[in-house]
Each structure stands twice: as structure tokens, then as C-alpha cells.
Image (cartoon, rainbow, N blue to C red; front, top):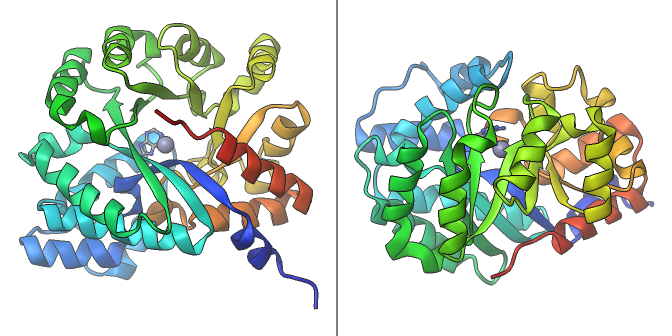
Length: 318
Ligand code: ADE
Ligand code: ZN
């Protein structure tokens, strides 16, 4: 019997380079942590939460994401969250994971930097034999740059546990140029750099991420296709672009999965990988993203293998 697409995808060694740990909080764990920490949720049940996950754009999702994160309070909570993700990633054939976390989301609720870092580390150690994992500290771009700089100060004692900085949250109206100093400072501290750009924002934001922040990888980047000069630059430099198809569908960045530009990006010779972004909210982990995009867009197994190879080659090392 020919091997099914799911088995083929699972067997491909791959890196996941674009996943937000807060976006891996499944409603079941959210309810368990809410009970443990006596936090009230705006949902009556797990099913009710899942039904609320209908998004019209990035902001409508971020509001729900940040609300869900309020149940994360203790070191054990962050460890449980990270363990659940790494277990799931290993089952999908992920051998390397570079995982975003949003310190400002937790610091603003009174959770200490050391609390989430210790929780992440214990889970990363537990799964080290299955998934080699690293952390990317993301700045929330809807907050002022001074806040990002203060976050970097707080990160200083934990630098051995942080690979890179990134830039996430609401995109339009918050161009990368607003975070030049924070990225320069992060680079001077020995951190690598990535940035979300060209998800809802225009190609100009991708240029800024490259030229003003020194971003080594572009997260999403799908709107780059609107600018032929930018496509040439990304192709010539083989800049890694972390594409998240189910996220783009759910946040209405693309009208439907079968109109996703991933095949075009591959044809143009861009260095693209497939990733899950916020799998608990978008209906699929990285393996589901490979399978669903392959089925919707008739990608060949050779193309999927190319994407998986790209992902491993685009991992950052220090
Ligand atoms: N935070 C979590 N997911 C995100 C996304 N897709 N874009 C920007 N910020 C995010
Ligand atoms: Zn993202």
C-alpha cells in the first residue's frame, strides 16, 4: 500500500521556526490552569472556547490570544505548556524548534522573568533527546520601544537561554523602524534577529525588517510578493521566510488555503518553510500545515521535502 501523506510528512525531519508558545495553549490545558490558579475564563466549556476561535483579522485573534495567556502564572504552568508543545512537535517529526515567547504579556501581569524562563527550561531539558529547542524573545510591537528595551534589561541574566529576538503582535501602524534601537541593542548583546513582517503589513515593512533591524529571517513575509524588487532581494540572499498557511487562512490574510501563495514562493526560488504559528487557535500543528497545504495546493512530495530541508537549513545557531 502506498504510504499516506500524513506518514510521509511525519517521517520528514523538519525544523519548526515560527511557533508562539502562548499560541500552543490548548483549551483543555487553559481550563486546567484556570482551575489551578482560580482564574475566570470567558468561556463556559472547552467546546465554547473552540467555537469562539473565529477571526476576522490579526487583531481579533490577538485579543483572544492575550486573554487566554492570563491563566499562565507559575513555573509549573509554563513547564506544562512547553512540555505539551514539545511532545506534539516530536510526534510531527520536528527535530529542531525555535520557539517565540512574549515576555511583556507575562511581565505586565506580575509574572517574573525568572518564573517563565525556569518553566521553559525544565520542559526543554525533559525533551532534549527528542527535540533540540531554543527560545526567541519577541517584542510586542503595539507597546513602545522603551518597554522593549526594559524587557531586554530583564532578559540579561537569562541570555544563555535566549537565541534571538523577534517582533510580533499588531503589525499595521507599527513599522519595524520603531524598534531599531531595541534590535541594535539585542545584536550588541550577541542575540540573533528575526521579525514578523509582510503578514498584514506592506512590503515596505519587510524592507525595514531587513535593512533597519538586520532581521536574518522574515516571519510570514507573504505580502513580499507584491514587490518584485523585494522578491529579487529575498531570492538572491536566500533569506529564510517562515510561512504559516493555516494561520494565514484563519486570519484572512489569504481568502482560502487553495489560494495560498506558497507554490508561487517556491517557484520563485524563495527559501520558504512551513510552520504552525499558533496551533491551538488555528486548528493544526506543523504536520497538519504540511498535509493540508499539500492537499489544497497539490504540492508534490519532492516539494514538501524541499520545504523540510529549507526549514533545517534556516535554523539559527549561536
Ligand atoms: N503573535 C502570535 N501570533 C502572531 C501573528 N501571527 N502575528 C503577529 N503576532 C503574533
Ligand atoms: Zn507569528
